Image (cartoon, rainbow, N blue to C red; front, side, top):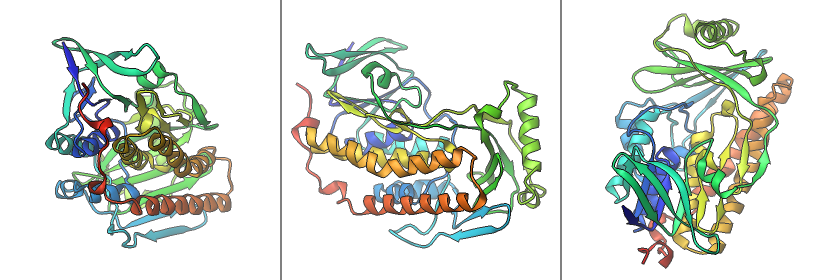
Length: 390
């Protein structure tokens, strides 16, 4: 079987689905291929920062997140060893609260919105090979499906296939930035926590977070240097998780009123990277092109930001526009990446950590301002590059 489309996207999580939504609204024929199943869960901190909430609001999909019972987050508490600092979420750019939806909700809402806008989704489809022109330009994709092989011809192949992206590997995407530190994460879900805000608690060599999400639950995680994680799955991971939680006296009053309702899961850690994310006939978005340590809980915000920046470049339809996507993405990411890597080192004093948090907050504000100054996508005129492939 053969299909001709304008754009094929590999990966239907938040980065791929958001990119598909914006390009389909611009009139492109978009096909999204994902080896997984529609509506499944995935590893995530869930937390959305202001830039992400602003974008969901601007795209018109935030109401579905709110109506599904996602609690509004109006404060963030930083519990240091010597003091607590609580930051109130001030109304700005039309955003008066943050949200942390479960990924079974967020990803599904974005897929549904993209489908309603005309994008097609092919689940249970595994990308197996890129197609190239004689000059090396990527021109499509071969996919294995339950119904046989599918050859897809496209003007642009977008890799949104996550941390271990096959598309990035096949095109040889080079790393522009590489992190030096990585944290391991153990997490589970709790019912009955009285907190209604984001909770970040810090000590030497460990951090704890509590993030309110759907169904009255909190995602409660512990994070620590990856080299401290022994290869001890199952009960030992649970023991380590519970032991670390007990070491945080600032969190004890909250957990004493709650109960864990799910198994403990984990992430062994991965050094961050920022890859070159455009080339002849291809582009990367989400963790495929940019991953930083989850300790600062900014990954979904990164993914939605870059989905819009890439979609705008594709709609503009020029090499210059794609080059500007690279430049803008690097400019908005570089300091966030560097600060996150420093926090993930756990080699800081408390005053240094507070300074790093202030620097991170300033960069998030700059990021949101940059997104807010962009003209509405509806005002952009798609170029011939997103019209049907002959």
